Amino acid sequence: MSSVKQLLFLLISMTDYFTQGNQLLEAGQIRKAIISFQKAIEFNPTSPWPYYHLGLALDKDGQLEGAVSELGRAIALDPDLIWAHHYLGETLVKLGRLEKAVGEFQRAIEVKPDLS
Image 1: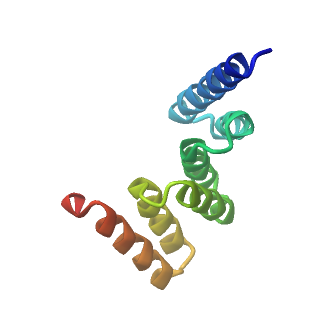
Image 2: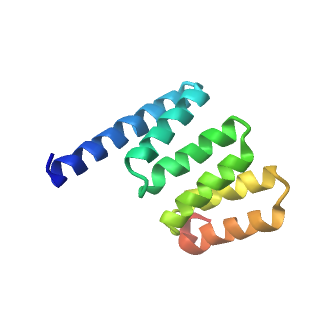
């Protein structure tokens, strides 16, 4: 398989799992959504979006430490992903890490001040 075809296959597969994960998350099937987002990451580990959505799903499943980890990975891939900073801040509040949470909220505002 040529490298272009292989890349196209990987992107389509990642998109399919990512879309499926979002649909499952909206339907309240959180554990299945988590699996779909994990598969999306396997196909394209350089996109921040599956990590972000996996973080959201883990948070909804009560796996707050896992959510912090995945949201952090999304931010590592795209430091300007304001939604990841915001949701990481919310998750840190739930964990009682208020100082770190404030830092994430501030970072989101720095990146996109017109949303504050």
